[in-house]
Structure formats: C-alpha cells, structure tokens
Image (cartoon, rainbow, N blue to C red; front, side, top):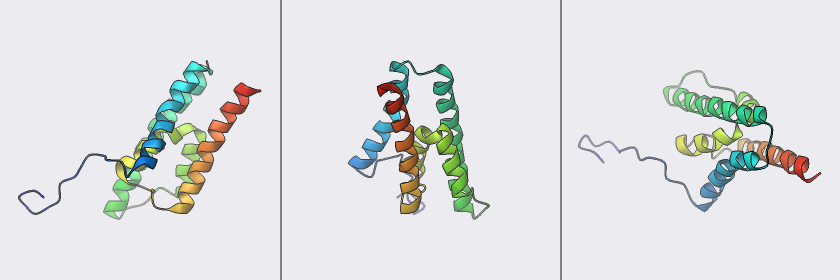
Length: 125
C-alpha cells in the first residue's frame, strides 16, 4: 500500500503455469508461421488484428471500470476469429479481462484451436 492507503498496481504477474502456457502459445504462433514460410499477408493480418484485439480489450476493460458502454463479447470474438487472438491472450492476462467467464474462454480457445488446426492441416497436407 502507498501513503494514501491505496493499493499499488502491480505489473502483470501470471496467475500460474497455465497462463505462462497461454502466453507461450500466442508468442510462438507468429514466429512459427514465419518459419513455415506462411504468406506474408497472413502474417501482417495476424499482427494487425492482434493490435486491434489488444486495443479492444483495453478499451472494454476501461469502460467496464467506468460503467460505460461495453464492447459486445461477440465483437471481441469476431476480432479474435479474424486473426486477433494472439493479441487477445496478453490483453486478457494483462488487464485481467474476460479470464473468469468460462463460456467466453471456451469460445476463445475454440477459435485459437481452429486457427492452429488450420495451419497444421495446411502444412501437413
């Protein structure tokens, strides 16, 4: 606590090993595509949509604290589906946003599995 009796904000500390694993999946995905010589537009699309996802999560968290208009969960999922999931992983953990909603997390990780599955299928076939 600081002098005014308020709790200090701590920088991101993972909840545990599962969060470290989540970050590794997101952190290794784009370099993995680069190593596999994935098309550059796909890489740039993932990078751009990851930035959009990170900003969308930050804005939604800010609005949730202030009681303002919120971003619908479906919109967040569409951003993730369009390639923003690598940016959504650190945003969820950094802002502690949407990490406890099990239905949201199930949908989110289904999107992640679909993306990874697509690239595995594309390069194995």
